[in-house]
Structure formats: structure tokens, C-alpha cells
Image (tube, rainbow, N blue to C red; front, side):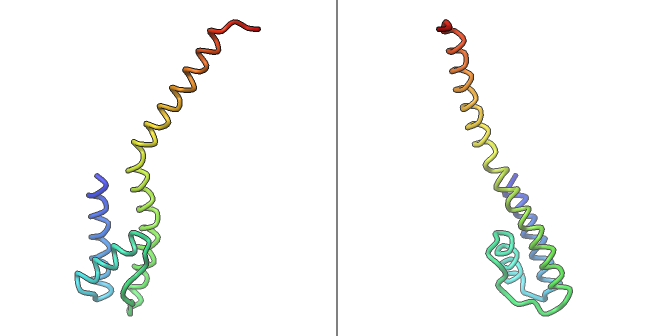
Length: 101
């Protein structure tokens, strides 16, 4: 699921850089991937439309990339929290079973 969403996001960025920034498809995809991962742009943009697109795509990319990392880590975090909660519940039940002093 994450790979598909990242592919779509890079495709949108590549299309914007290709059509608005007049970059080749390879350079456009490179710029989109670099912006999406937070590395920064590779090529200079000359047109105002391309610069406005780059601003919007950079803002989108920051939120999108962090969201995809969260989606990837959610199962592991859920498992960790579940196991931690079981340990706490186990200790609490042991305390309740012991007589008061």
C-alpha cells in the first residue's frame, strides 16, 4: 500500500516538474523523489509556475513522507504497546492477589 502511494506521489511530482519546469522525465522524477524524501531539489526551476508547484509539492511531501513512515511503523508500534500493556496488567493482577501487609 505504501509503495503504491509513494509511486503515485512521485508520479504527480514528476508530471508537475516535467510540464511546468520543462525538465526531462528522468530529471523530473529525480527532483520529485528528492523532494519527497526531504533531500531537496536537484535542478533549478526557471518559470514562476514551476516554482509555485515546487512550493506546493514540497509542503505536500513533508506531510506525506512522515505519514507513510507512520503507516509503515504502526504495526510494530501497536505490537510493542500491546505487549507493554500485557506486562503492566500482569503485574497489577499479581499485586491484587497478594495479601495486604
